[in-house]
Amino acid sequence: MKYEKIKLMCFAGIFTAIVFVFTAYLHIPSHTGYTHVGDAFIYLAASLLPLPYAMFVGAGGALLADCLTGFAIWAPGSMIIKTATVLFFSRKSKNIICLRNILALIPAWTLCIGGYYLYEALITGNFVAPTAGIPGYIMQSALSTVLYVIAGIAMDKLDIKTKLNGGSVL
Image (spheres, rainbow, N blue to C red):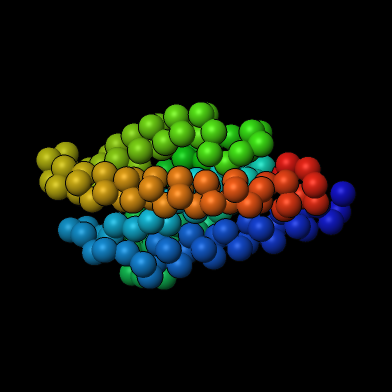
């Protein structure tokens, strides 16, 4: 039992680092911040890890990326949005890419686009100017979805969920 928790903490740490790298360093600058594919790895973590660990990945990866790239003002919003994003996904299926996780992409997109719009409106006090960021949030969600599906299919073909837990699903 003790080793299971350590293993889960290690996987959460690895995913957090991956989210950080793909968010902070592999991004496209936009009008207020940047567009990235780090969300794909939050979706993967949510499809593989128990909820508290997946929530840590979402919050931790986003926090590190925002704070260490000069966008710390976005960190509180990112932590809330990315932590909530994992709630839509399920790890209970044998496969990462299952109907529930495909359908989870819809509220994940909605939360990302709407959440960042509202957060920007709050910090700027303007509900019109943040509409300029919506195309970037749509692109971020779309690119993350494509990467999530491709990586998920590949991981499913390799039966990663079973292998990660020594013969049983994580």
